[in-house]
Length: 399
Image (cartoon, rainbow, N blue to C red):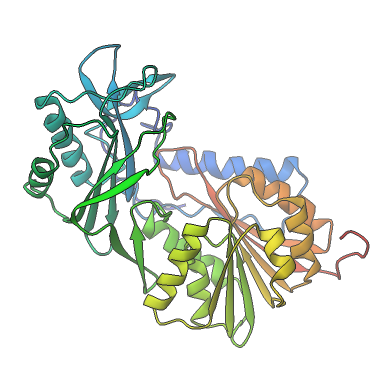
């Protein structure tokens, strides 16, 4: 495998931050480890795979993340305020990561400026034990293709945060990308997670624009979107290339998220139906389909198994892109019952992928190929795409 190697120095915070398990590991070794993991999973589960293909390297090893969620806190109890990631094996400690190699340098500039801003004004961070304090999180999102930035500071409802000064500080930073929105999210929940009790638009708008495979997407402050745009373009393009001609056919995109794959399918298919559990993602999918002038998309909010029982249509082709837990046996049974000739399975977790493939190969489908993708260099995460073809009608009596 010919992979262009372009190494940065090992990150200053590699010993503290838990983000990059493969920090300092040669990239070819990272790829070999991930490919070996997929191979081992297939072998241990005795998957009859027609072809295990070479792992696809990421387009870029560095600066590929388009979103980061940072936490305010301290490294040591009652120490100076920090802003960044949870410390490895010390969840209550926060490491300032203003030299992170996984994000565009604008993220690091903004992080450092925000930390200086709140420190100079003597703002307190939110304490997990006492549930008191002002500063909670900082979320930065970037449109890779559009160069747009969304900055969202998450605080409690305590008084004292100077919103106007914060906006002026952000807009005055020397950034390569353009800030299109500065937001403040109010979160008074007890859990150490980002919730939105109130969203205030301090400047601009509450979304940024992105483009994938020639389609435009409006990405709001809290909507899910793929973290590595260039890598996921390669993954989607490969996955859809596995399908036979599906013009004038009905295609189901299950676990469709904000409808990226659904809309790509709709440009060629007679009709594309996307099903997704998260209502907000479905609303975004519908809005983005309208933005792209696609009127042959239908999006349904609900559990995949329950939605399929009421959809009223039969697919000719199925694409699935489930969450890390994979597909439930009930959903698998329903999908298999359609008896479509081809299923493309896009997976963000090879372990659950292999479990689902094992089930499907015993109920009428052959695993034609599996191809791993390295969409997150420096980490142990690996994605994969599998093509399944129908080898015989689904056995009766299992539904």
